[in-house]
Length: 86
Image (cartoon, rainbow, N blue to C red; front, side, top):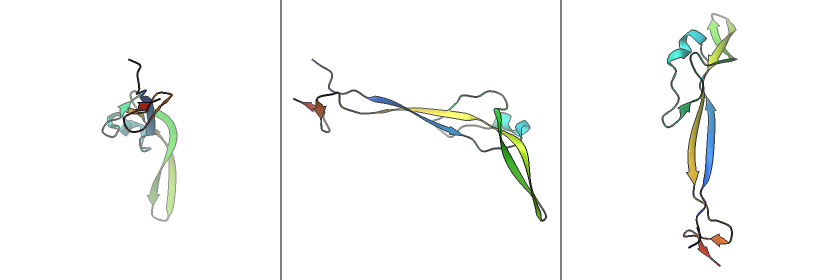
């Protein structure tokens, strides 16, 4: 019995919002995502504060998150919703 279904594993990556690094310790990834960074995260972004007529930008931190999901696909030589074959 040959396998008819060959699911593809897909990784979806996202980054959390940029915030002051000291506040980023408690930042969680969205539901279903796994945090791949530790502590205060990665200091690779800037966040903005509006003060009266000025907008100031400061270095900040964010976390990287990943979500893995399986996309059902048919193996080569099979097709259709039930992966019927040749």
